[in-house]
Image 1 (cartoon, rainbow, N blue to C red):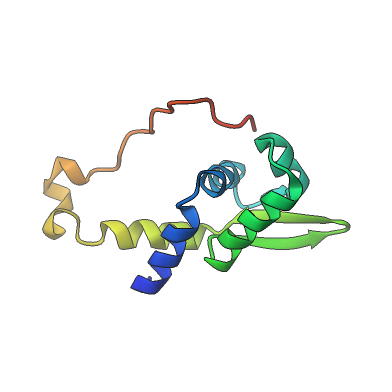
Image 2: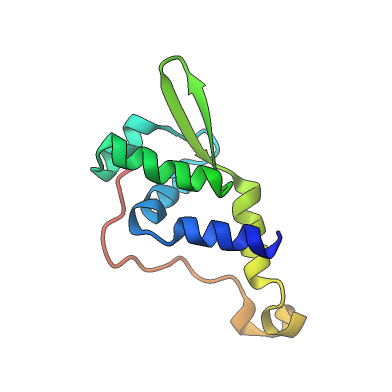
Amino acid sequence: MEPDQAVAALGALAHEHRLTAYRLLVEAGPDGLPAGTIAERLGTPSSTLTFHLQQLLHAGLVSQRRASRQIIYAMVPASMNALMAYLTENCCGGQASRAPACEPAAPAARSRKSPAV
């Protein structure tokens, strides 16, 4: 991943609604969710959600496809993995195997309830 791509991805995630929507899509997996379902689960108006999902789409973090009259959004695993790899590429000076600080983090504690899936 190039630095400008990382900045675009991080910028897209730097908003509470987009981050919450993205986490919901990560939880849903590569099959994704219809836009209406995402809006319902997040309690966000459809027009507002569309704006936020477009930001994630332009950053390459999600994909969209049409299924009949619905638009299905899904996370793009390769983009998420590339961003994580970019952020941790030089962790612990390349000595990650010998540095406990560079081991994968435990699941994050949630300070508030996540959207039901």
